[in-house]
Image (cartoon, rainbow, N blue to C red; front, side, top):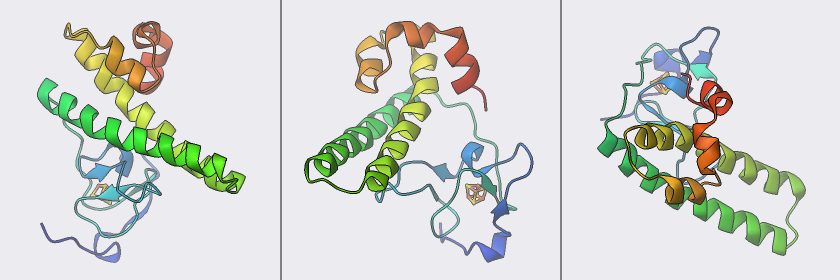
Length: 150
Ligand code: SF4
């Protein structure tokens, strides 16, 4: 699919429930790790923006969730490595914070997928630990209410 400009789809700050963060075309972990991306619209995309082409994210199948978790895991570990390296070479604190924020976003996005697969009966303890979530946290009503909502 050919990507289009932000201007052509009236990319703007979101004011309602429809946001890039819950659009089917949003990608949270592009290769640059600096921001979100969109499969339709060119450039860096903010989670709290929206455009005229918003489409609701559909419920993922178990297979899609598992594949996505695998991709996220790679991105998450690459970020942890970068954070560690930045700390070792004494990078600026704000640079480390930026990377940590990106790592948290991936961790946060992984949570509902881990919950979905765990609720379907899969043993997700090891996979969850890979993202820093414990088995108890996967069962937590509080965390589910916060991280599993649209
Ligand atoms: S299609 Fe529009 S609303 Fe959806 S992620 Fe892309 S820019 Fe955001």
